[in-house]
Image 1 (cartoon, one colour):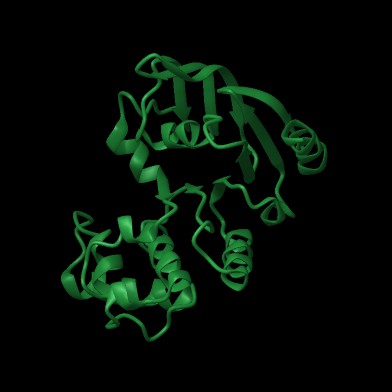
Image 2 (tube, helix red, strand yellow; image 1 turned 180 degrees about the vertical axis):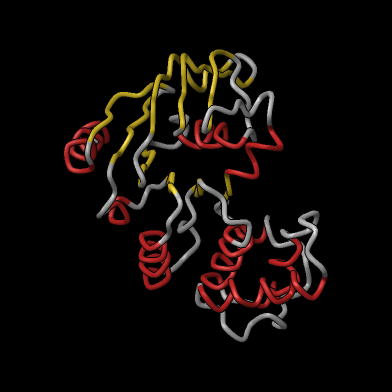
Length: 224
């Protein structure tokens, strides 16, 4: 359960979010809106990457502002550009790096990393140089580095922006198979088939909140 209560935020004098009240129990939720609407800032508050200037955020009863480390154990985050998340030379090492501090041995971390890579479409790539993967493979690697920790929530901030059409579809299909609650920030409205709820933001405020079809109808009219 993700809750935003009276959430507001500014960057300097610019109001980014204002009076956001949302309770998100659904399995698949999307945030949509024009550039600068506040959707990415709102998503980043779920795991404490951005803290609200006003109001409060709770994730399963935990406040990211007070319990950031605990929240980040519950919430995985996938960014637009996977290169910003890849920190180790090989794909296997990068996923295993996420398991540091878990108490697993080096061999166990490597084994678990290889299992997750295989499960999500990168079987046999554990020894492959991470930065020589294709764009789609890099995004899968970033996803694996989060899923290896088995979070309860996965937040994806425009994860298909740099992908071609084939890989966008593949990534969207993969999100649909995950057991995690997924919060997706996106401009790719075609990805939202099968989602439970779409929240539309404009000027830092929630202007529509509904099932995908009516919410996206409102958003398209807003963009005219």
